Length: 262
Ligand code: ADP
Ligand code: MG
Image 1 (tube, protein in one colour):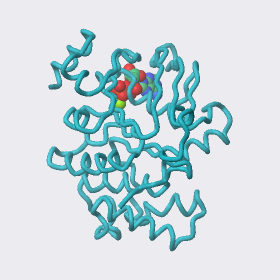
Image 2 (cartoon, rainbow, N blue to C red):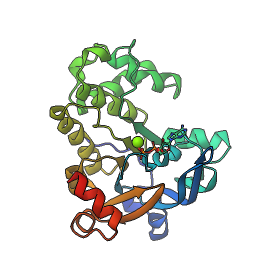
Image 3 (cartoon, helix red, strand yellow):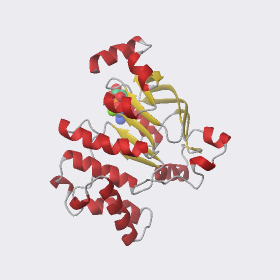
């Protein structure tokens, strides 16, 4: 099973210059909540297919940062480009970017009054105007992928937390995103369910999905991430390959954070 939603210019056919253009680019991004400066000059370039883990203390701006990438939060200074399109007040641009970016949250945000299948076909039918039969076929494909097809006619409340999160991931994939954002997708789960969700995320990563994951699952970061980013106080304090990041953190704040969680 492959997930290939990339545009026709696949990795092989891209020229050097196109391959180098980041799929996500943040340039001196700043954001305030009232007087509170929550993102401070954040620069970040993400290559197509890159897997990034963002970690850092609670309140450091991780959720705000990734929510800015699909405009769930609005930045006030600097520039954000997603697949070459600038995120600004232009609603056409916002719509375009939201179509390319899927997101999974800590709380799965499934519609409780709809079955699993209805949850998955809702947006493809109503937003993408996909014929119902095709939407159902796509939904069943992704439910199979996350090993949950047999639950298609149940309601979210009848599933375990880990199953609901896998449904939430499948729901995002039905919209054929080029980029997936994860905001602590396992932190509301019981320990025995964490692995089943991380396994689905690792498979997605293997298939080449561009991923930005806020998580404190450091085993996942070590085995899946190309780059680990440490945020503190609204800034990117340090970033490196997982090996360097964990074995040789450069900044005191990173060392202090890692000593608490490892
Ligand atoms: P993290 O995900 O790293 O825990 P957040 O991005 O959620 O951090 O929050 C960063 C800071 O911004 C926190 O101090 C939080 O209290 C504050 N904050 C988050 N959302 C809002 C909001 N809607 N209004 C005001 N302050 C907020
Ligand atoms: Mg958060």
